[in-house]
Amino acid sequence: MDRLTVVDEIFLRTHRDLGTPIALQGLWRIPDPMSPTLLSAIHDQLRTGPLGRRVLRPRVPGARRAWRPNTRAHPLDLHGFPPPADIHTNPGLDHPLREDAILPWADTLGTGLDPEYGPGWRLSAARLHDGGTVVALTCSHALADARGLIHAVAAALDDLTTDATTGDPLRQSMRSSGRSDWADAWSQWSTVITGTARALRQGIPKPPAAAAPDHLPGRAVHGTLLTFDAAEWDSIAAESGGTPNSLFIHLVANILWENGFPHPVITASLPVDTRDEPRVDNDLAVTAIDIVRTDTPATLRAKARDAYLRRMTSPAGLPEEILQVIPDRWAHALSKGAGERDILCSNIGTLPDTLRTVGPHHCDRVAARAIHPNLRDFPRTQLSGYLSRLADTYTLALVSLSAHPETLADAISRACHTTGPTPNHW
Figure (cartoon, rainbow, N blue to C red):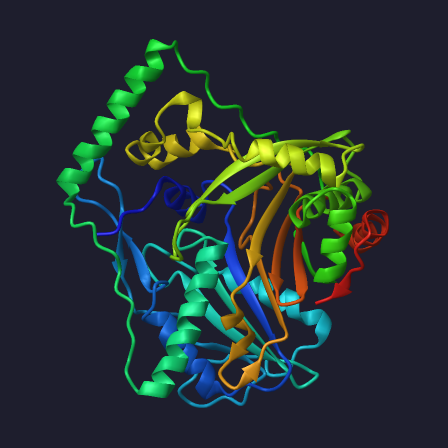
């Protein structure tokens, strides 16, 4: 059976209120109305695809949790559509959404996701006031990272097209390692004992640094979506001696400073995609860099290049597998705040062309981001940025967790004026 990775389990613990709750979300903007029948077909493809799974607890201490296929799903969630009897609609939300209501609506879709005991994902759609449609796929971070979520959608849309052409139902089976709980527990304990002994021979490991406590009153979650012309973005990056990625990091850091961050150094967390093939998993590592006000896209390019060679290691020099054999609260204490920095810059990369077409509809805007359902304790991170490219457009999704959400728009304008790229609303 397919087992959870260390990263999977970290996000599973956040789902249980041990850390910052995170749900991933893909948003598709369609300029014309979509039919509930088409949305229902996409929902069915997702239900029987790679997101259709849940966590299974092991019976042997030390064995890793496993993934079990799960075709149960939250009902297709429709807003502003005529309500057929067999499709769930949100009571009291019958009117199409206006432009400024899209993100507030999408922010509510992360509740009720349960990767362990129930469906960990939800497909939602809303009619827009201008006659278009916005579609949202939201899933627990335990199920997938951003690239994994995109792969799941691309597979569902591809299967939908193939089914319509051939009439053959397509189902994606889960990978199977065939290893029993006993064998997996033996392997895990052997790795942990050997690795811990090796770490102790080098001295007692230092405990991991605790996350900086939150002393900022009035912190709130506020999201925004921006688009940029890809040719302009790439040209500015090249002219400054940087890359599209280093310009992204530079812009997010400057937005935080413009929004009142008081310190001369911003530390950025940089996720790194480590997958060698398309699959729905948390297949990532994390590194970090320090940014000062004199940095440019060119200097950040060099810092990021070096950082990608020295990714964050396991807690206190111990083997990372220890986080899967000790109780959850101990594991959370050992790894608490390990990946949190002042900003998060997640470059999701170029999205597949498959996402540009949904059935007969052309999709003109796509965004990927994370949301934080039921957030109670704010993390160190004050601004998260998620950059993706589709065709000739970059989309930047920003999630502010600072004490000044009301000034974010002005901070974005000032930072973009300084760094060069022209922002447009999504």
